[in-house]
Length: 311
Image 1 (tube, rainbow, N blue to C red):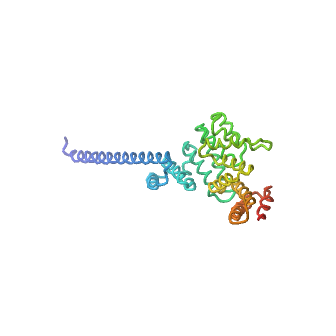
Image 2 (image 1 turned 60 degrees about the vertical axis):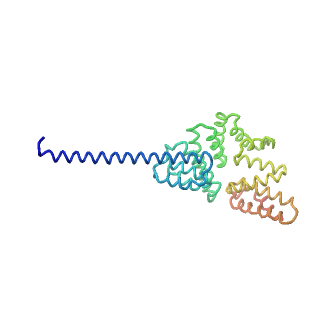
Image 3 (image 1 turned 120 degrees about the vertical axis):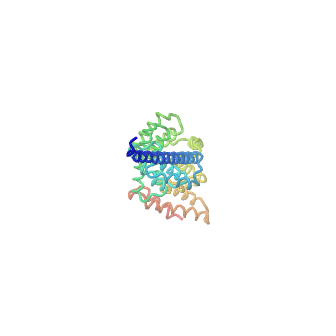
C-alpha cells in the first residue's frame, strides 16, 4: 500500500465506524420510540374499550409528545377526551386530522365530538348550526367509508338535529339497507314516522321496549318517550327524562321545550308550597332559554308566555 494513502484510509475507516455507530444508535432509538408509541396506543384503546378513560392524563401527554403530525395518536387522544366528557377539547385535537384522507376513526370521533360540543357548550344559534353542519359532513364521510349501521345512524342523528330532511332521508334509506329490522333502523324509522302531521303515535309499550333494548337509548328516543309520557300525564317518568335530557344536552331545543312542558304540568297539578315553587322555577328557567333562542315567529311563544304568567 502506498504509505501516502495510509492516513486517508484510516480517516475513511474511522468515518465509516462513526457512521455505523451512530446509525445503529439512531435505529435503536427509533425502534424504542416506536415500541413506546405502540404500547401507549394499545393502552389507550384498552381504556376506551372498557370506558375507563377518566384517569388518562398521563397517557394523553405521552401520546401528544409524538407530535402534531401523528394523526393516529391525536385521534386516540380525541376519543379519550370524549370518554372524559370534554368534547370541546376533542374538537381541538381532532381538527388537524380531518383532511381529505382522514381515517374512519378520525371522522367517527369528529362526528361525536362536534355533535356533543354543539349540544353541551357551543355559543349562539348560528355557532350551533355551523357545528351541526360540520358534524353531518364528517358523519356522511365516515358512513360512506364504513357502510356500518352505527355510522349511518350517527349520520341520521346529525341530519335530524340540523333539520336537513334530505340528508336524514338518505341516511334512513341506507339504514334500511344495512340494518333492516335492527335497533338503529327501527329507532330512526319510528322517530321519522312521527314527523308527518297525520302520523299515528306508536304504542307507549313499543317505545319503552325499544328504549330498554338500547340499554343507553339515544337522546332522540328518550325525547320521544318523554313527550308521550307527558301526553299520558305520566309525569314522574316524564320529569326524570326531561331533566336528564336538559342536563345532558342543555343546547337541545326539544329537551328544553319538553322540560318546560313537564314542569308546567307538574306545577299546575301540585298544591301550593315548596314543590310547586320548584317546578315553576325550573319551568321559567327553560322558558327563558327558549325565548332567547327560538325563532322570532315561533308559534309556541304565546304558550310559553301564558305558562310564565301561571303561578
